[in-house]
Image (cartoon, rainbow over all chains, first blue to last red; front, side):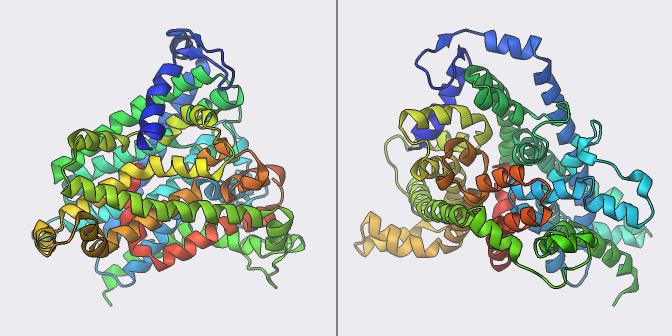
Length: 271
Length: 271
């Protein structure tokens, strides 16, 4: 079963990527590297969606690592109700991508939550159609993506913080370091490897993102939010350029496999 | 109460409120009638009305989608328990021909992104006439998630001392009895995690179901929701109610099994 539905399709994927095929008809045409040539050299949209995916990764990375680290180190303080905070941060993680998409589209709508809020607090001049704006649509959706993954980063960072030797903090406190200095000079350097883990996971997640974008902007406006996964779906399924879609998928697979390998190697090293 | 912790509490309360807010506002919106939308989104519904849920459930046929989701996800979870634990058990305790070859193959499967496989999977399903069958979706779900569950199951069985198995063997128990009477009860924590995560992933998946299920009567909640929100873009209350029909069961499960979900999803972040 595993061979049929995972190993075999992986091999098929590479094979199809050299073909021109509509997915159902019996005529498959061997076209060699033509799909790749088109992809890499003459198709601007492919590079646009690659750039968007990288940009998406950069934004979610910044939010997950920076906010994740700060929140994880605050949760590590001797506070009451830690469980409830953790629960709140993790709640979005179990949401379906499509649910996240619907919620956040409403947030960003011209008459949606964010604009209503801005008007109420007297910042009416800042209101806009967030997802209709060519420049803002991608970062806006990436924030929604980050909302869904921040909880995981916090848990990973919390695990890392627990492993830091408390003596380090004690001796620094004796030397008169404040909370921000502790964070900057002890927490961050001690968590180097954990930060790398979150980095890798966030990049993998970005390259697989489909639901949030597909259910909100479908890659628009004017391809501002086109990611590799939505691009592949459009070409491969909707325009039934099956071989070409597979070539995009091969590219996606190579990137993800590269980072997954890094992740597994890193996990092994730790153990 | 330590006074220097007050800023920590302030940051934690504000951030967790911000993160939960989109979900809370969605619940508010789902319980408001169209007339109540004259109010601002953060004002609770008064009185709460259930017409959005009723019309999504009956008119938009979410009762059918719900039933389909329950069928697919329950079978997925139950089947995954039996397949993954048996496979993991075999990999740890039984030397069978080819086991050295199969294990790396499965571990490699950890790195294969589902998004990239969707196109060849479609072709294979098509050749088996499994498009528009729940069976096809279930087969694909199981195969694609199997590597991860073998991975965590194997790690768990490795932690069980092999003396236990030897003792059972001395008592005259056969391989299957050892598995069923000794190991299966011992593996309860990992089995619960397997069932919960597989259910969650299956319940929340959109792409696979979007591609494989084109007949409306077979669709799951995720696909149903995608088309519903496409048709009723302006109906905020309706979208919110429809999204909550999908999210509700998952939120309840999460609140009951928070520890398992948080630990499992952190391990499974690579998926």
